[in-house]
Amino acid sequence: MARKKKNRKSSSTLEIINSAAAGIDLGSTSHWACISEPDTGEQLVSEFSTDTPSLRELAEWLEKADISTVAMESTGVYWIPLYEMLSSRGFEVILTDTRSLSSVPGRKTDVLDCQWIQQLHACGLLQGAFRPGDSIVKFRALARMQRTLTDQRADWLRRMQKELDVMNIRVHRAVADITGATGMRIIGAIVDGERDPARLAAMRDARCRLSKEQIQRELTGNWREEHLFNLSMAFRMYENMCQAIKDVEQKILDLLSTIPGTDAAAPPPAKETKAKTMRKRGEEQLRQALYSISGVDLTSIDGIGVGTAQTILSEIGPDVTMFPTEDQFASYLRLAPNTPISGGKRVRGG
Image (cartoon, rainbow, N blue to C red; front, side):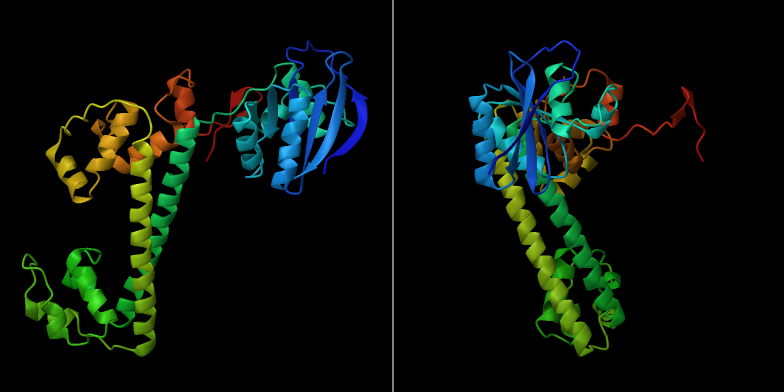
């Protein structure tokens, strides 16, 4: 439920640019919202809970007050549900951080955070943080989930490798890549109960450089029960992660197909080695989809693969016009070095 606070008259001596502006101070249990009367300039403050019905009450309260633009701090993840709800109702929502709020002088100690946000926003002194369009936001959420699952899959792969090492079953010496078809076939057979090194060695690919006898020696281990159990758990988790990543990748392709873009196909990579690597990883379909929404092939840049191109486009989208200069774009990507400055002069770091 909303809880109103006694009206305060705004102490601002600055010119009001937009009286239909609101300020919201976000919290984990409650949100404080502030609006101002267009005629008297008095600030009205109300407190709302953070559950979804209360967020609807907050949005309706702003609509009744003819508010068109709202400013809020990007605190944790608490802003996301309210941001999405207000945006869906047609409000212009400005995200700001504490640095931009604290850099403006003249704040009085008895002014609430929401009042200060509203006052600065009404005077046009707040600059919103960058947030891409809704379709790119969805793309970004899926891409971040994919990276999370990929990191977790790598962790379970390391656990598999550890259990094999403590049993002295050196699959990584028998095959070049344990995540390849031969490596996974051998590990899967071990998990299913196969212990005969000769039968395990017979699963080798015909292209393997080592002979069956050499592979057989590498696959002779001590087969301790507790390590076999841990190996089976890690192997199952690894397979689950692989399937989850495939599901997310398909979801990403489905989403990208709905984003308007060019119908032209991406040009073939200039380097055959790079094209071969992308084909081996099964990334060609994703490369084409990324080209469709952006109109450029970022993988044509040396050092940028399909994964990096997906990260860039999922974080900022195909439109970079909101970055006036290359320096600002590099700073947003956190590629610009930190330059300590004190008293207007650069401070030499270690």
